[in-house]
Image (cartoon, rainbow, N blue to C red):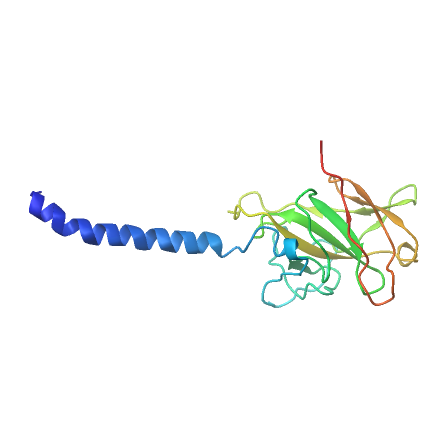
Length: 197
């Protein structure tokens, strides 16, 4: 290739490389800011998509659906519960939904492959700790490298949501003591799993 031909091609090649880089950066940035708005204390949710019906065994990688303010049991939404403040110091937390008998479980991780809570929880063998099972994302799925909150709604036994503190085990992530709601019809405060180490 002659020097003149190289100079003639150099401009279009650099422009093409710059355009490809811009597309890549835009695609990576579309996941949103880390924490999904957690630093401002506001909720962040994806645009609503068709809700799936609640089930005892949600699929391992459903798209988050519904409204972060008060999802129904079995629904999962991107972001934090309305009014909750996020944290980067814990992998998960739990709080009461504004709706009686529903626990909101928040997990942090990839927004496209979140760790989700199962649709229903029950008392452990001692009857003192509420067990919430967790559903791992599909290991073969390509996931974004962001760190964002996802909220899952979990149905609990009627006696679990009785206006007293409840110990909740979030799979292998740890245990929290969930405080009751201050007022009926409002979400309770999020109890975060202590950071490891």
